[in-house]
Length: 415
Image (tube, rainbow, N blue to C red; front, side):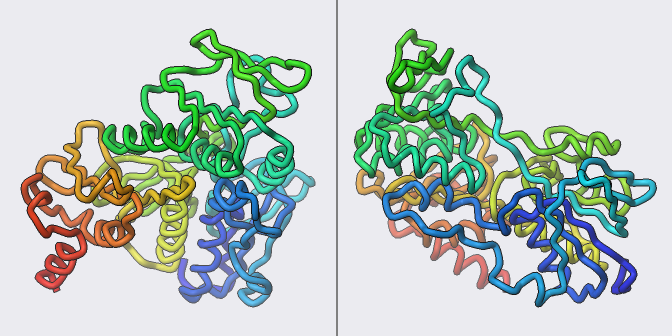
């Protein structure tokens, strides 16, 4: 593309990934038109605080913006409050819901993901909530102010963050999880088991291996019927049963979709000049060779930067180390890397004191690190993972071992 003013970039989506692409394009020197399509009525905002800060008693009066006031004007970025209805990649045109259309030289899908719907009768009753958008969070704030009994369906990050927030308010909280352990897709069994015990100790009634068959209107409140045949009374029900990437627009345009919009290692689709970033993108990670789709702020922002650099002429595969975090009450979970079920877990630190890390070894190499209230371990792990570092359980359990010291040693040798 190069730095030609005639080159216009159109970004579908105004979340973390989309705004980062626009910001980074300007930082990389692009002077052509940049347009971002925002299908929400709100100015772009940060989503992670919605399930954390917004669920506490002293919740913020305003959402945290993705960029400060005047950012769009200062960068010469056009934002349209418009929804894309179809894409013609041959004509390089996007059609909008208002009947107009807009052309582009480069198109970036940053369409994100949408909550999976709760597949049971009663999911649409008043008092049953999802949590994805600012409007969802505002509705939950109102509901929490009068609720006494809360049932959370799904023990993933969102469900447990919300449950911990509701519990700090003194509410009666029950969590129903169909799987045998919480956060099972993201965490090792060792870490999952610790979180289950901790939430139970904090007074959350965590019910594992127990799903939901129906939600009923009980007159004054709701009744949640479980797969175990139990009925749980609730004033408020929150469900978090995963998300689906928003790919309908891309699929209708003829792009390949497999659990996300399929892109190559540079994050480009099979159609030249069409890219996908963030929660909606299925990409091949250069360091691991795995095809994956990641739901995290880090992935959204790093991929946004990468695509901007590539549009401006860089030629590199995306290889950033994935990392994630979750705040559940006083617990700060940070994960570096992506674990597999067969990884060997090695504990370092003191789980009883609530400050520890778990190293996940795969074929004798450090693949991921899960850290609880141990930020120094997490920061060091992000530097180490992806280096192909050979480690044994004995190395990690040696007296005096720390990830920080190891990172310092390895990076000094490599410099």
